[in-house]
Image (cartoon, rainbow, N blue to C red; front, side, top):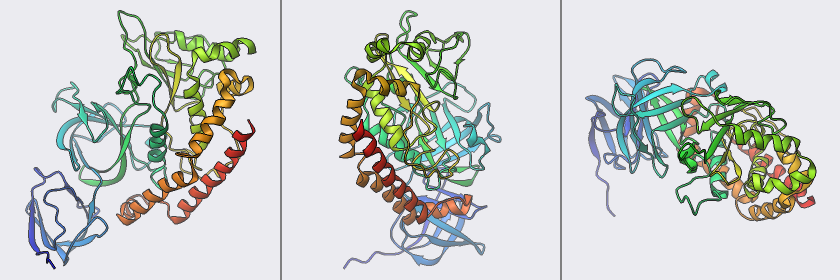
Length: 464
């Protein structure tokens, strides 16, 4: 039997080693287990920047096993973690806007680097939470506003990233599960022309320190934009690809009416122009025509023409998706609406799916499983059965129920994350900091909600 020899002391210089961070206020040390200096052998001391932390008991450490360290008789808890570690140190307090310059450190298994960023707070309701979310833009140097692209894991290489605080999510995984679910079930219709196109923004879990304080679990995410969706760029002043974000509940975003628009403004009836928006000029012409058609076309015209104007397969997918997760805040806002090229139809892209799976956007429970979510576009598609909409819903629902929408698959995704976050003390850290983490009863509620929701939707789609 091979015996593991003990290590008396490990010396760590954090100016070079990005895998470890110390929060002296909350007395937490986080150590990423992908650090080449990390060891499973017994350790007696850590020397971090010439500060000696002595183990209360000489012991082996692992992601599932914490340790108590002593420094000047003060007790620190050491948490090994496999999640990427981010450390942000800003020149001044981070505000809603403008962006503040900061240093950014990132450490994970395959990637470690230090960079300069501009950072600001993000969100609307999220601004009221004690745990903040952030927008980040990577910069060429500490004084420049010239952006540079960086890459995390398998996500895209880009300059623009977000950190989502998850404060309003009791189990901290609703946005992650629902985002990954859409990416798994839907591929852009034009993927053969654009192999790098994604159907939404991807995310990964990370742990964040800001100004030397541990801030907890976050989602690091991509942005939904022209690049992410691989929409066609303008060519010789011709608008080809288009992208809009639905920001508020208004007539246009619910497809109820198309009020007059002005292209010198960036917003029209709840829609923000995301692309193209150049020289302070928007292009709402085609979107206005589409919304007007949905709102006013007679039944015969709607039935015969709508399939040329919107991607029916994408619309089927989005309708099923918002209903399986019951995304109550994602039919009149919190979606992107785009088109790939001049002669291609519009399609939906989901966004900000935190108020789902039996909760609303502030995290409160909404134990409703017996309704169908829709807006005027979906209402008309159901009433007219344009594009064979109802039959396509039934067929696709049956396919998904055998795979990603099966009770087994959905519950497995919740249970695996819940178990992992418990065993690796992620929930404990989050609870100690913010005090709003759900427990087993919240998991039981979520899983029972899913079961009841599936039962209702099975009956609904079988009756179509």
